[in-house]
Amino acid sequence: MKILKKVLKEANESVEKVIVKSIGENNQEFDFPEAITLGLFEDMVKKIESMILLIENKQDASIDTIARSVMENYVYLKVLLSDNNELLAQSYFVSKKYKEFKLYEMIKMPGKKGNEIRRLLDNPNIDEMDNEANILNEDDLKEKYPDVFNKRFINQKWYNIDGKTKNFEQLCKKQGLQAEYEIMYKLLSNEVHSMDALKRWEFEENQVHMVYSNKGLTMHIHMVGLFLLETIRRLYEFYGLKEDLNTFNTLIRVNYLISKKYK
Image (tube, rainbow, N blue to C red; front, side, top):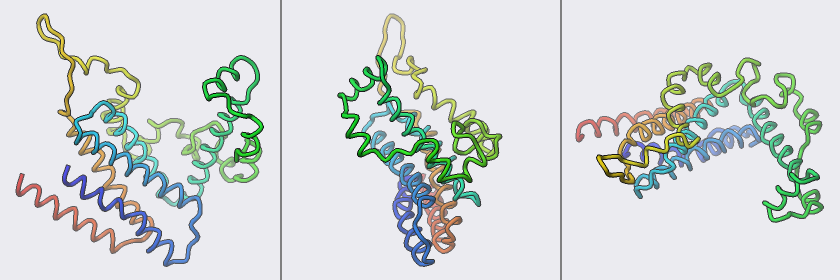
């Protein structure tokens, strides 16, 4: 946990370093490719902070869900921090806006189903929604982002710009993360899909006990720490922060040696 916290401390300083040293000093415009890339990184960091807080307070119920989401962030950032950054960021943005549009359509739909959805949302004022919502429909998106639609259809995954990456498993395989997907992601998915109900119970002869335990979280801590460490390195490499990368690598080596010595 100590090394994870050291990496997390660096992560909390990374976005500012990128903005000031790379984007600012090179007089680059902070556009939505940077906003999406750094936003996903910040989201990853906040999830890990939440996970640490839960572990330290002996609340393990959502750890698998958070760790799974951290892995998704890691894979997505590995994809984004590449030569196709701008196109992939556009594709990610299109995907998010299209989901917003489909949700907006669902809220406004007439009939019984629409009424039930609006009732669940405390009956929002549709006219006010129309005036206030910044919704881009399918035609708007195709007009604004033609490069994305030259690569994929609107209902395909945002990362499927090669036409061969239809799901997260294929994306992991393409990124050389097949083992991580098979061992980590599938295992963590049991919690997300509520498929491991028995892990909360301990059975003995004629007795049943509820289990509250933070044991067995070593894999989670190691996994998210490794994902965060590699993402920081990739972030510094992508934005040309060689000095910060070297300093970070040295910090990790020193802390690793110290932890081994006093283990």
